Amino acid sequence: MTALDVAGPSAGSAEDVAARAPRRAFPAERACAVVVLVAMLIFSVWSLSMLDFSWGNIQSSWNIAVKVFSRMGPISLPGPEDLFSLIGITFGIVVLGTLAASLISIPVALLAAANTTPAPWLRPVGRAIGVITRAVPDVVLALAFSLTFALGSPLPGIFALGIHSIGMISKLFADAIENSDDGPRLAIRAAGGSRAQEFWSGVFPQVLPSWIATALHRFDINLRGSAILGYAGVGGLGYAMKVAFAEFPTGYGRGLGIACVIFVMCVVLEIVSSTIRRNLLGVQPLGRGLGDRIVRAATKNRPAPAQRVAPRGEVDVHRMLRRPWTRDRVRDTSWTATGLLVVVAAWFLTDIDFSQVQWQFVPRTIESFWPPDLGSYSFADFAQAMLVTIQVAFAAALLSLVFSLVFGSLAARNVAPSGGVRNTFRVILVIFRGVPELVLAIFLIMVTGLGNQAGVVALAFGGIGLLGKLIADSFEEVPNGPERALTAAGASRAQRYLAATWPQGLPSLIGNSLYLVDTNIRSATILGIVGGSGIGFYLTNASTVLTLHGQVTTLVLMVIVTVLAVEGVAAWMRRVFR
Image (cartoon, rainbow, N blue to C red; front, side, top):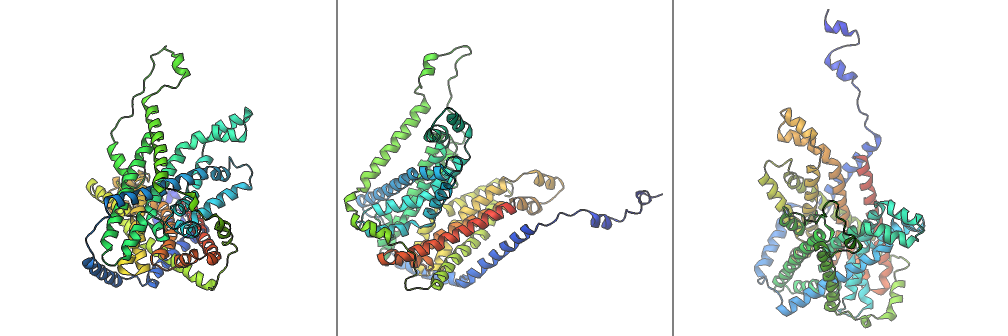
């Protein structure tokens, strides 16, 4: 009697067994998500074609750039006195704008956090403040504020950076508050403490490190974006670069020199902020920038400071009643004092004079933004401009995705064939990430004159550094069980990548790609300021005329709706593919 006879009539061949095996149902929601994802990819390819993006145009742009470089003077810098003055003004604007945003973000985050908001209806208000301030480009705010300030005043830049930064800082701070331990807050409430005491004594000490780290991170972002404020008339390095690029072709060398100064400032100050995060907060900097990498490399094997431990049985009561001046306390106090000196220096460097504010125009300027209107344009005109902005964002994201998959995969420890290959591609990603994409966009548009195509290239360039780093990190963080099982079964490196690493890293890849699209929409909005088209072109024109501010409100509302739609789709896809 055979084994088949023993198994009974229900048994059959291997094909029959495979046919009867239970199959995992494919959820309808996941099928919809796949359709939406494919539609986005098709839209990205279509956007590239509609923007006339081709290798032939790139070659033509390259030829134009070569001609410009041949006629351009050597790279130069302003005189030492002028250069330090420009650096001081830019530094002061960024410091004061970030500080103002950080302080205002505390009450906004308190309203937006579910566990600290005074009333449930105030939570959407706090979240709405963050969304609106995050959606309005800082350069548009600077253009609008310039109507109520004296020409050359740094206040429009400070106010613009401050208002725009509230969105990011308050959102991350509110998230940190919601994730804090409720035990101390509830204990203070049980002891009869007020709501203010609950926050300042039970919540704020827990989230203070997160608040400082977020403010420092925003400081880095504001410094990178400060160059664009020069196109709104705000003084500093950005304005000097704008003036230099306007002097064709002799000024291009000086414009490039100023752009290099901005890049060096970004790296140096990122190193400083990374050092502060490590020393003041006691955490290893984990950012993607060049500064965090330098600090990690320099402190990789540095041991933590030794702490004195009292011998067993020894109780120093007097020492327990006072806080000793340990090395850590001296260090923290020194950093705090240095921070206060930096703020004071920033105030004097910018030479702020509130008498420059034309207060009589402030109420009129605020009222001019309401109600929204279309002016002499139709909604179809604005919708077409918004479509161009979205096309630039998706096209740049697609190019970034293609290159990031290669660079990011080879920068992952569990994918790269050797440590040398991994380190090489990590360095490449640092280079891509280190160049401020808006500065690159300004230069490319000025050189080639091809606004949208130059904008796509610039956004894609910066996106490779961002997305490639995220892909590398997500691939390194996948569980190694499937990879080890395939290796034990004799699978090749490519088979292990396609069958284990890629499927596990796909959800993160989708979420990070959509985050890049969101970022690109905000950046593409600004390209109209420096010669691109899209909705930024209309925003620029409307921001400089008081009677057209109703159009600014309409355009900003369109940007907010678009950004919220992308954020909603991203959140939905992360949940579906989790």
